[in-house]
Image 1 (cartoon, one colour):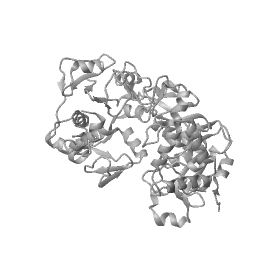
Image 2: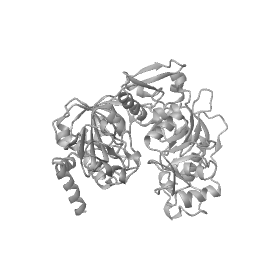
Image 3: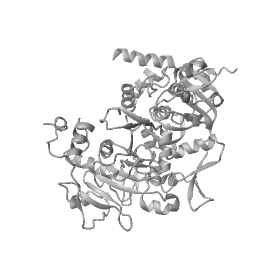
Image 4: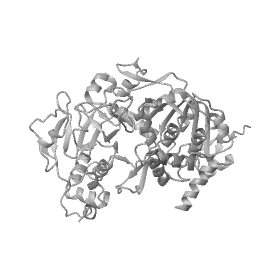
Length: 285
Length: 260
């Protein structure tokens, strides 16, 4: 019986520069931030990142890890605009594939189903077609509609964060929305799940309904126990978004000196150091 | 007396913000049992008002993953949950057509093309905004309306920089695949607009009380259709005013989005 427990460092050691990596969650919600922070500490570069973007995107851009970004939006939710994403776009330092949110789902689903594309009317008529000239249309074989053919978004790796998992990779969300996490896993050659707590398998359904078991072990290559691993994004019901920290992040991003301080305090350290710095800040406040 | 302290006083004069709330509510009139998706503060008050009064079968989400029953104030959660709408389900509803969204564009043009993505050249924008989000899919799948809180030649423009929401000219070019495209209305702090003209160019339907046609034309960066039949935007009824002021927005946040 496979025990898939790993550390963040072991996950990152399996990734390579130039890979296409999908990141689950949505905006500033249930992001696998401890895995993202481990990437920041690595020498990985030239990544293609596919995501409904939040601060995961901002941090990776600020660290110069991203060559291409594939997204429908990048937002911090309670703060509309992501500062590092804005800066990178306005400086022209990142290549982008900007899709409608639904096209992103369709691309992941096509990859999950091992299809070359999926047809949709989403994107038709918009400048998504103009700025992504590689997109093709397909004529309906059953009618007169010319639809957009969203190409499969195959991922080398997927990173997601869940509330609970067992050591074999069965994983559970306990918050209000599963987002698109299992599509990221199924679209990926290898999926890595971080979670707040690894528990015995029987405990998963003792505490929550069957339907919360969104991620199944056949989708999963590795499991990382990472309490607070989604910080500062939300991980309901374990914790909400750390709005104060998010404001601190945004303020720091606006100024190179403040950002250097932020990086030194929170990022130029391991995950335990990050969590200790966050906790220390809470005590001081 | 500040706007906030008078916000719940039902005898106070009607504010511009309240005219806007009612104009936003009216975009959902006749929609029946569909998901009303207001983006932004005044559209949110409007959608809740529409359901509390003339459009009781509308479905409303809390902005997260819950469909709420009843009427609840800004900043609060609904007392009664009637459904579960994670983002996956919202996409399904979009593609089914059973939805009418009201979005807030940073730019909108004469045919209703709307930009929420980036200002300037897409490949190196002067100002990066959110990205196109769901605007392309929304606009070709179900009715869309727009809310612009500060009407000016900066946002009512001759051509938008990145077509996120599809306008009538682009929908026509896209052919049968865009058969479900409809832009119902645009509401700004100056007036109400639609596209019920032969070429689907934007038409001034009504100006808000105290606003002249000339003022609207001057604040618009393209040729607006003004067909001589411009009405005044309607006033809230006493019951609507009471709901806005005492139930949905007792803190008067509306009057901060559109100052008096």
